[in-house]
Image (cartoon, rainbow, N blue to C red):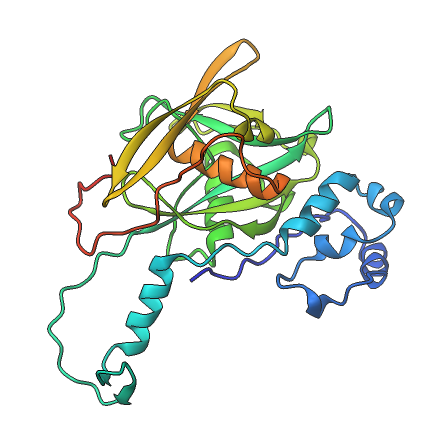
Length: 307
């Protein structure tokens, strides 16, 4: 089940009095929002007032759109819920719980993927386009070395939710202060090659100039950005067909060049960005997407990986 994502303050340098007056001007009561988000309340206000805070109208409209996005329920989530609800109960042939009395059961513990989160940090480019922050991983790393990825990593027990996992990892990897990012929504989970349950968290960076990249040399070689819309276009793209648990899927590869440097964005990162671009721009890609279905084996060894 998706954890509720709590918003991070966007306007941390504003005065309390002015901020309160702006919030009170909202035309939408806070109870109508599925996610408590002070940034969202500012969206429907006079654009000139918001501009005083350095927030563009385009970013405000995007946040308003995304805060109502609800990721589709995954089959695996539904199955886990049914297992939890029926655990320890005697169930009739009709499927109704007849007794809440616990009964001895000999069951093999089901494999449950570890949780991780990545940050899709969006900002407005010089030409008004939405751009996303990416990294090239250090060649010293034992897994996915030298590959392009989104900031993120495995969840820790102290993380309150997926948003905290994503922003904490982004701060550790590239020095992105969590207070600069306004979290607006999460996408459906993706299954990584090493069977991690990866939750993409979408956040908005209202002022790119406030972010001064300071990559952790042990984890990141380069911090760069790319236009989000490129992941909807069938340009500089190719794909490979693979199979996982009886279902075929496509791995996408995007060639990208910026500042005379070439990058290959592929695999899980490409799949997540295709989905994010589809949600942001509210349209399907101009090619067949065919992501792998989120299917987890009932049992798996430590070295089990997706092809």
